[in-house]
Image 1 (cartoon, rainbow, N blue to C red):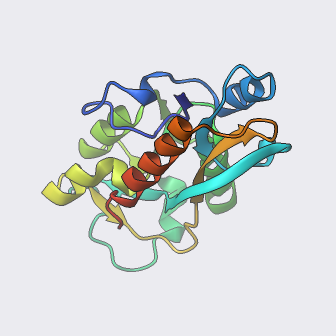
Image 2: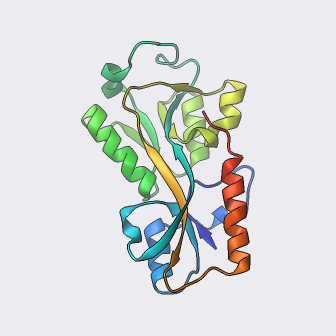
Length: 193
């Protein structure tokens, strides 16, 4: 099995998510019958594949508690164009959604620091380099301990739907159905913010 990136915390896991490739490459392998299942984000590129929803989440803006925007309770929209955003450099559905949101909200996508993984994004946001854009469950520990804070912005509606893909010609085996069930249970245990 291979999974879309962002599914696991780099510090705590060395399993399924270690196989990091672009989701479209996985879906191509699925079409070629080189993979049986792909866990990833719902996108328009799954035409012809069977898709089952597993989980929905959203992305959030996270900052250091010492960031100038951390304690502002008024709408922040007018201040966003002045900020540096910290985003993942992976070519995936999340990055496409982030890029579109930045373009719509700030008018450009050049004010961003592109990093390779979620851990790096969290660390840069914690030291005040900019505003990280990540799923809150990825930063659950940091949000709990207070080293990161979610800032609220009107219109930040980067919703994601995770699911499992398989080809229409492949009926998942009992082992694969068990994997799908365990994956759904793991998603259900993720903290919500």
